[in-house]
Amino acid sequence: MLNAQKKKILKPKGAAPTDLEEEVAKALFDIEVSPSSDIKADLKDVYISGAKEVEVKAGGRKAIIVYFPYRVWRSVKKIQGRLIRELEKKFSKKHIVFVANRTILDKNFRRKGFKVRPRSRTLTSVHECILDDVVGPTEVIGKRTRISVDGSKLLKVFLDPKDKDKENVESKLSTFSAVYKKLTNKEAVFKFPDV
Image 1 (tube, rainbow, N blue to C red):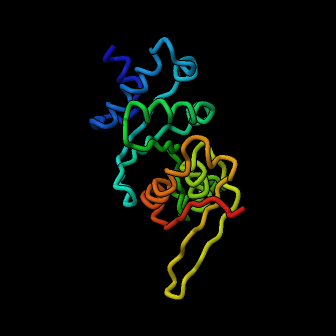
Image 2: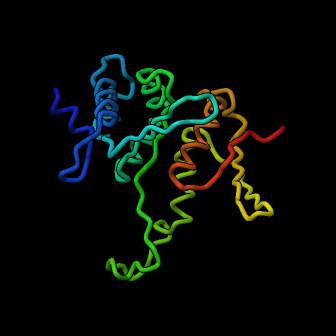
Image 3: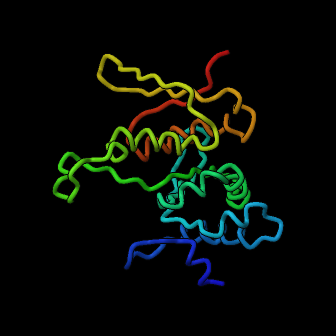
């Protein structure tokens, strides 16, 4: 059983999983073997590559960022809403955010053996994908970048108002901002448009 839990974490050789990563892997394994779980079959091939805890300033909460390898991201995306709910039950008083591992290639990509840098590997594209990952089950319907006089940038992200009530998204807006800041080092404010 312990060996099956270890299969839920994929780390590079020589890297040992942290306590938090083992805890998340155990929770995933428990959800998979639970007889009442409706996402049991979808979780069979899902494993994580890491987990981090982030302090959310507003509300004094903590959030857990769970990293998945890109090759299993499509499977996770299908069950993301239900899996987040199940993990938030196990980790009470903590928000859970899923993110796929993506690679950014710099402008010296030819040294790494590529002839052309794929568009999906640019900094801009990866940050856009991280934004979509962070908001999770809800959808981004608009973005505005505000540049102040001192040169600082603030990204305003508008989420789909239909998702305001479901999935408890409204209480997670400050969590989305903290996680996006941690992952991309960019300031962002998440809100619902005024109707």
